[in-house]
Image 1: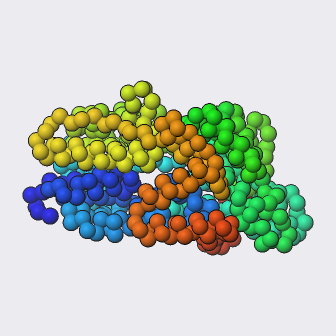
Image 2: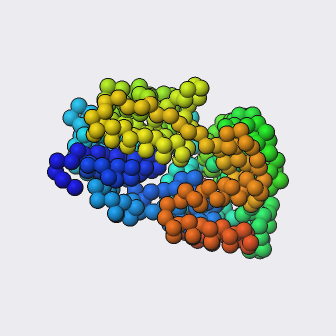
Image 3: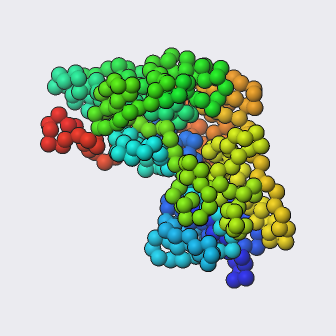
Length: 434
């Protein structure tokens, strides 16, 4: 690095931020990548950590390790508290300030509970490794609590612990529901003395008329059939009305479900509001065609935080391939500016298709109109996800774990951390609260 190098600050070590940083590896710039975590996370497989199929290290890699050979990049672990576009400064929570010549804000998205943030303690979402570990803890402890309730003859409490509700019928919800059904019916078989895990109810709740609404209707129907084949109850065409520590209300009916998981709405990172740019209803920044902030050609937004419309009027989806493409596009635009080219090409999203796995040997794939499902789709899904994992060790570990799970139905990452804590909303003084 040289003191004369222009400074590029990248906020967010996800797909958009990391792909931009790596694409500038040979540029005469000094890059600072800021993230609250010290790792890059492969979010498409986060549900596998939540359901004990993979360990945290299988789908995450330290940012410093990834960028260790890139001499023009450094990593700063911290949280951004303020953005001053006039002074071109980023302020961190510890009070430190970083100047920039180019800024990329790619801080992603978080959970959205549709105005009911009070549901959050009772229905955890899935965006970070901490979220996944908390979700895994709740799922595994639910079976333990059911065993305890059954041992004292409390069938009502047992059934409440053996009822799992997933809110949101998109890819994450479908993947969670299918995997939980497999855990209950196969992985835990024969391990308990007072309960039969196969009696667990797994309910997938979708406010719309069908699951996987972003897929063609025929693939949505196949996914629904595969889920029902696994024993998943599909509850569509009505949203949840309330959620607490004892269950949920939907369509005026109260359901006792001690474990509710959130896979529905998302909201953009609050950093978007600091840019002073127009936002859409989800809080995403309405960027210019080249992904820059209107009025600030040196500031870019990419990934889940950017609201980008395709030529057909549809929004660019908040998926990993789109974030990678945005990050690479921002890097090309910066290189154009460094070369003295002020006119930048607009971002053009290349849609390579949609994938979703339902369970063992079951998935659906839509590749630009070429649709298939079942075993072939499952193998395609597996190959695609392993291919895009960062690092040889991650790929080898994931392949080994999946092969073991395929032949044995076992899941190696079933250690519960934090002990048998009382769930939110329960009464620790009540001896029945376990």
